[in-house]
Image (cartoon, rainbow, N blue to C red; front, side):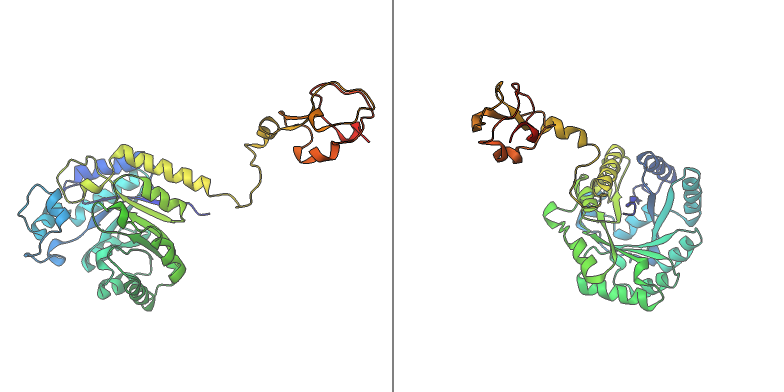
Length: 340
């Protein structure tokens, strides 16, 4: 199987501070993820000045009265700052990604040589946006929070009608509530998407903890995306639903372990690591006492005990009522050559 791509979603958890963004990069490097991802946008191109914040944004931000526009302006980094962050990622040998939320940002990010574009859940119904990204010709990872199957089909149609082929598209199952209640995860929808659309699938997680992304890895996700922060107590919309650095490390370890655990050929057989335990853990046929040649074996004359280096107990019935053709000793391994 291919290696699972792990994306550490820094998003806007830098709180508009490039130094915090660099710290997030350092923590992502320490966790050994494949990519760190930010969010690139010009607030004026994305949010009306009167737009309200989501309830989770109001709950998680210190300023309860600011608009979504005002919040966005505080979290916005300039294109020049993203150039600096890309160079810093290169110097730290970690992949740089950022989600562009408007066409200008997409064009800018394309100049940074990202290997693929990440489409956020909120843009899945934005036809001009989807067309613009598709025409770049790069692979796409599409999040599907809030979407139904018809909307996913429509988005795929737009992407493919503008030059992409299905093998270039990975669809991430996602729920956009921050944090997502466990009962709303619906993780089985991930493989339903795969079955219906024949695409590579993954999972973008907003639950608390690391169990669900690890479970998604076990269910076949090729991409896992998870928000992380330096400190969940920082003010800002996404910190509360994010992992802290030590948890990010644990998640990566868990996913890589699952990756190994599901990498077999699926054929049930003793593994190389357990073969030495067969004779130790299993039992075989042994004599219960010393017996002389000519003795006819009765059920109580044969013990089934460890080690399992002799005949399998599956051969037990063969020896009952057979005559010994030689002397045997107590707990000696039973052999077919002993009887006639």
